[in-house]
Amino acid sequence: MNASKILQQLMQQAGGSQKGGSSGGVDVKGMLSGLSKQLGGSDQGGKSSGGSSSGFDMKSLLGGGAMGMLVGSKRGRKLGGKALKYGAIAGVGVLAWKAWQSSQAGKNASGESQGSAEGERVEVLDGEYQERRSLELLQAMIMAARADGHIDEQEQALITEQIDELGADQEMHNWVERQLKAPLDAQALAREADSPQAAREMYLISVAVTDEQNPMERAWLDQLASALELSPDMARELEQQAQQAG
Image 1 (tube, one colour):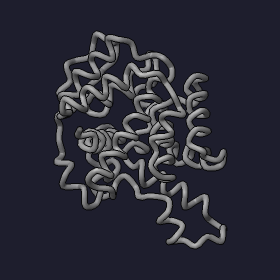
Image 2 (cartoon, one colour):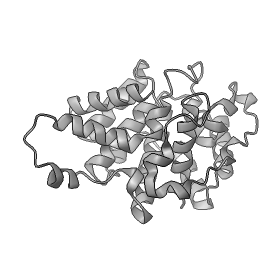
Image 3 (cartoon, one colour):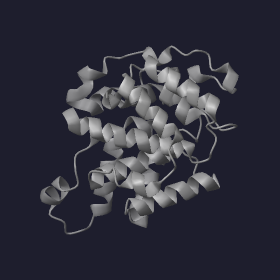
Image 4 (cartoon, one colour):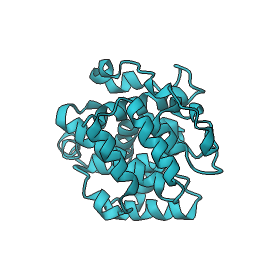
């Protein structure tokens, strides 16, 4: 599969969309450091097929890509406002790490040794490790976007169709189709987390695509935090980081 390619494009598009689609948004290439060359500045996600049949302007959502449609397909939601936290998507690993650092402030922790046990940020992973983390984050995002039950069969078909436009291979395409139909299971999702850092990233990116004021979505976040074994303080810190990133 090529999950890392899809996630990187999503992060790049989110960085550009944070400030009206301009390149002056979050510096995703800078955050991705050595991985920046892999981003390639692709605009494939902008090849929207229109999206008018679903009642919203897909071109305004993260460049019109399939994942942009996924996070923006909440009926009646504020598509470009509080509901979508573009900065949190663009800098998910950095922000999740910052949340952990904030939680350690004032504690007598042995910095480096404890930090190394936390796991690496998605932005600095490579190879199979990057691919695995990318799958974890995409799965978390899809489940969070489905938490209010507002992705119907027509929208699922449009999402899988546009996955191809993002450059997904057949295996990735099939995986996304399965995720769109799989039962929502916070425990099963949490078992995919390969490190404490991965768990924080999975929760933060879930926060980024949900509306905490929606009871169903708030309930999903609470279930996920518990399944990921995040303390209430850590969950609040991650939510705060997501809100501040915007």
